[in-house]
Image (cartoon, rainbow, N blue to C red; front, side):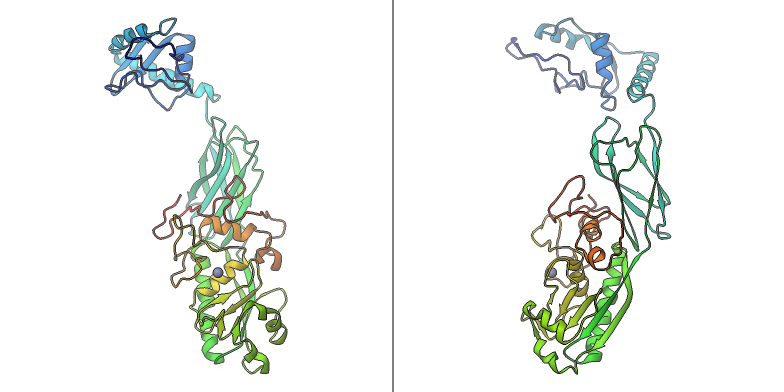
Length: 406
Ligand SMILES: [Zn+2]
């Protein structure tokens, strides 16, 4: 972009740029001479390059100035004194029509009006959309955000991109829906995005240590908390079944009262495990703490919870199973209210960036263990990846407490 420069105070300026094709900067800051509608960026090209007229709109006046063949300090000064010609009302209307016409002409007379048609959304709940494609000037748009309260979302004008044409959709009790290779055209598009039904997963909870009924009550509270957070935060996952098993009478249970991950294999061998599910074990302590938990790996189907762990910890450990890691160090965008904060009693939120990863990370239990998304998109988005294919981890369509949508 080139700028029409302010004439130098010394009267000598050998570096006056040609008239800017896109934006003409006000020559003097005391008034907005030669500024004009920013909404029609191609307007000065057609009206200055070809016709050698400069038309400017400032606060309430409309001016035109015939441009000199060559821009020099001298004739710029002359132009500054010519600007006060005030247009008639008819002239103003005419120029505005010209502006509208040229704006439409550049884009083929009409910007397209594209609609995303949302299938199988949950009743009464808004759908959030992150949309990729080219915008009307032809620039790549990444994760442009829309919210629809109906089965349709008007998203303005999207055109095909050489890089990313994608829609990611979020809704309450619906898995994250990812549509790749969206067939945007330069015309009006109606693009369908369909949610799958809520993913329902079975888990088994083993009460290894402590009083069975007391610990089972804690486990039930933790399950209910996880389900409530998932629903409120649009994880789109629920429990199809939860099996509670009393292992407190197992003679070997005492070997696992003070759990560390080095005991994982022995615990599952001695106490039991159900293949194809996440297995949760309530023990005495985990890593020496009576309120800690461990999944022992990202993407794990194993969870150990200490006897006095709070009810939001199960959701956190299941989040590790979904491939999510801690976000404690990302203090600009996260605090202890996020489910993946390492030590917290107020876990509540997932970002849309986290939801996307939970569903698309290849070794998420949703994909690798439960095979709940057959044939659907998987991605290798690390926590800190931010690209056309990986929404940033702190991407929020809706505010999370004090953290606004972004
Ligand atoms: Zn953790």
